[in-house]
Length: 84
Image 1 (cartoon, rainbow, N blue to C red):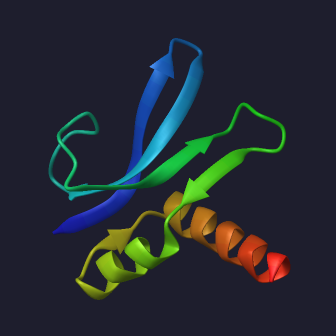
Image 2 (cartoon, rainbow, N blue to C red; image 1 turned 30 degrees about the vertical axis):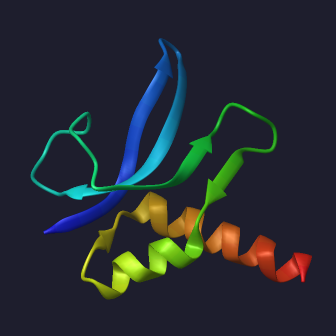
């Protein structure tokens, strides 16, 4: 099964994350099928870049999003609605 989840990168004690689609059985550092964006929790406010169209496409194909990815998607969609 495919999963939309975070892949950690960055230096020790300075995490940053890529939002990726990958097989749910593989380890976090495995090769991803697709990159959807990134998340940097250390900046104020947290920096989130996410391609919502790609994410929705993967959800329709059967990928399951983690709780964190779902909350990031909600934040990005809310921010885009306010910008319009």
